[in-house]
Amino acid sequence: MDDEPIVRWYWIGDHLGYLGHLLADHAVIALVPVLIGLLLAIPLGLACARFPRLYQPLSAVFNIVYALPSLAVFVVLIPYTGLATQATVMIPLTFYALAVLLPTTVDGLRAVPESVRQAATAMGYGPWHRLTSVELPAAVPYLIAGLRVAAVSSISLASVGALVGRGGLGYLFIDGFQRTFPTPIVAGIALIAVLALAVDLVLVAARRLLAPWAVREKGAGS
Amino acid sequence: MIRFEGAGKRHPDGTVAVEGLDLEVPTGRITVLVGPSGCGKTTLLRMVNRMVEPTSGRVLLDGTDVAKLEPAKLRRGIGYVIQQAGLFPHRKVIDNIATVPYLLGWDRKKARARAAELLELVGLAPETAKRYPFQLSGGQQQRVGVARALAADPPVLLMDEPFSAVDPVVRAGLQEELLRLQSELHKTVLFVTHDIEEAVRLGDQVVVLREHGRIAQLADPHTLLTTPADDGVAAFLGRDRGLRGLGLRPARAVELRPVSDGLTYGGWELALDDERRPIGWIDRDAVTAELHAAAGFRPDTDTLRTALDAAVLSASGVAVALDADGRATGTASREAVLAALRPEADRTGGAADSDVADSGEADSADEPDRASQADGADGG
Image (cartoon, rainbow over all chains, first blue to last red; front, top):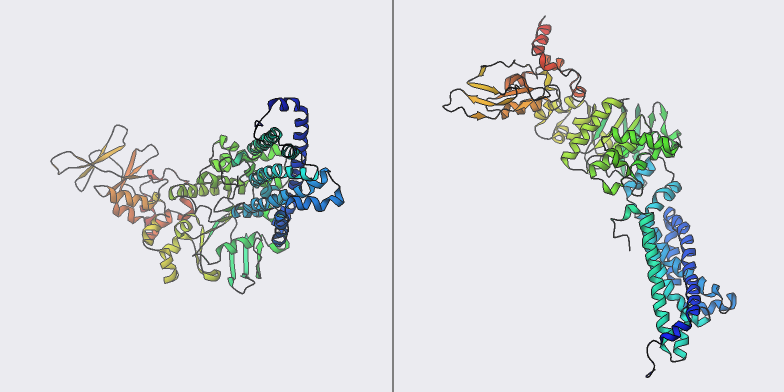
């Protein structure tokens, strides 16, 4: 790479459409699993808060999943979901997102002060009703803090999917490396950073909107 | 009426929280359970709304065993106020107050209108409605907590150390507010505290508890302070019981001397301004016309304790009775204040404990000879 400049701007100009396509693919592969993870984490978290005995085994399972190298999981899934399909990459990413979101959901539900919980019970909320209309809304800042971590790590992990043929912007790294041509690598890094930053800003705005009462609490895991 | 019939609570590990208590909580009055931590007072309170199930005996609410009622339904009919207020952090004040009406299925508009009424009732500004709990002071949060408990107009109110987490000045304000509310609403209140001062201030009847929910004494505050059942209760009541007891009796029982110009009290003369407000005491024997402190009390709202305090603070040993505008309406020496303690004077003071709260006869200061009338009646 000695004579090669870090960025050849004409290449970027020539490939804008291609880069846009990869960016969109990357966003879908990385973020849909986070959304599915959230949709699973909420009922699972509520169940764990209601029946605390569930939480230890469940979180142990997800911690083990989280510890598995993503590439290995992709490869294992190929026989079932196919090479270069979105599912091959999105299924493991969903589990990773869930591994982050389940503990934050449960922490958020548990973080509701005991006095609030007792007041709710004393006013005639049943256990489930209380969880969904008192503890869950009060856990929103925690959920969003968890989403920020899960989203950023998912955006980063998704590039590894390029090794099994479906990695969105990750493909640029393989391409650049194989051709000893740094421009796509730089473009890929920049776009991933922009995507991560944009998603994070959206989540911060969502927190302001959904939990205006929590602006003062900086410590909600964020 | 709430009635505990041998109500006891034994935990699964065998420890006994409450051995078995018999107690009647009369309708429309404030009953205070007071005792050291671990005496089971909160456990007893929670038996009423089934947040604790008794392991022996039962609790009756207006004759019905609460164990036969569906918990959620039962609780929606009982107001509950706790120490940390326990407001929902994610709901605005107005929606916090409207919680039980929402649960009862009221429509939003009606529930919020009711909540706004209560906001006013507990003395909070209308603009508080749109705030979130974290934007309120501790005292304001507690007021919202009381409003929330009253929202569906429950006949019974359970209060678990509601004012013990706020500073003493705010606490005194909240206690006064509760007494004012109670004089309008006449709820059946069961109030738990570890603060004996609070107990005698608020209670129509005070239940002093020992460990395992054993009743050490059940009495009205005045009886409790003057005749504790045993040394244990006396120790729990603490020092200065007698003086504190004065705080339960209305100052209107004090016989006042009319104020007239040039009147002296052992060489002291009361100096008044043009509006007849006291300026100070002048020592007639002194060379200079120096003014000495004159302390006053309001016979219609203050207690004997305040009156005696005023007399002690005054250079002349004489307290000045004031009307609402601060004008002198009469005077009372230390002896005159203490004379109001005579049993016959006590009777004119009426049922001392409840009368302090509602200033029924506001102009008793204009009847300086009440006590002597009672004297006469007694003699005849």
